[in-house]
Structure formats: structure tokens, C-alpha cells
Length: 158
Image 1 (cartoon, rainbow, N blue to C red):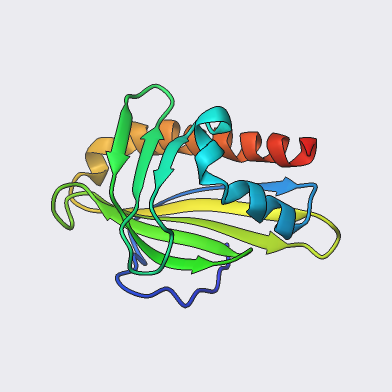
Image 2: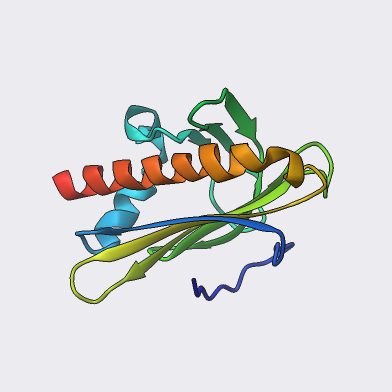
């Protein structure tokens, strides 16, 4: 995975990585338009059930995640990067820094052939990581996959 970013603020470079990608048969313009229609998330997105706030660098947003096999969780991360048609990245923490922090990214790559690759990943760090192996390796990875597949289906149906 190679991404380029001019992200501002704290960025996690080491720790645990959960990664998923999918190729969507549509241009990055079309994918971005559906991806950033946050008000429609409750109707189609099985992972990110709600997204509130302005995705601007340095701003706090509110995200309701529903991991498969788990209960919904509300996070209030800070946006690190927002570049139209390319990337949305945020960083969140559980209570206090370094307990369980996550830097979540959605990166679009225009493949130049009418398709777009969506890379969704999260770098985690903190002392709770060893105790959350199943949640990260199974539930979180499945949540990413389900969202990617739902976005692909929604975009390609348009």
C-alpha cells in the first residue's frame, strides 16, 4: 500500500494495520460523490451508520460505527486530511491518547481506465491492541469489506 498525504496533525505510522481495498467500475468523481453523501449513509452503509460534521482538516466530526458482531460505537475523531476525490483521513482515541488510538483513511485512486480503487485502512496503536485482536482482525476487517462492497454496489448501480 502506497499513499501520499499532506496530512496535518498527529499521524500514526506504526502499530497494527487493518486494510481493505476494492476496485469500483466508475470514475473517482462518481465514487467521491456517493462516498461524501454522508446524509445517505444510514440507508446503505453497513459499517459507518452515521457521519456528522464538516470533514475539514482540524475539525472534529462524529462517526457512528457498527462493527459486525458488535455493538454500535460513537467516536469523535479529528480530521487530518480531506482532499476532494482523493482522501478522507481522521484520528480518534478511546478516552485518553495511547490507550487505543486509530487513524482511519479512505483513499481513492483513479486507475485511468474508468475504474477507481478504494483503499480503506486504519492504523491502531495503544496498550489495548493485544486485547482487541479478534475485534481488529475479524470484526473491523469485515466492517471495512462490507462497506467497500456496499459502496461499490451503490456506485455501480447509478
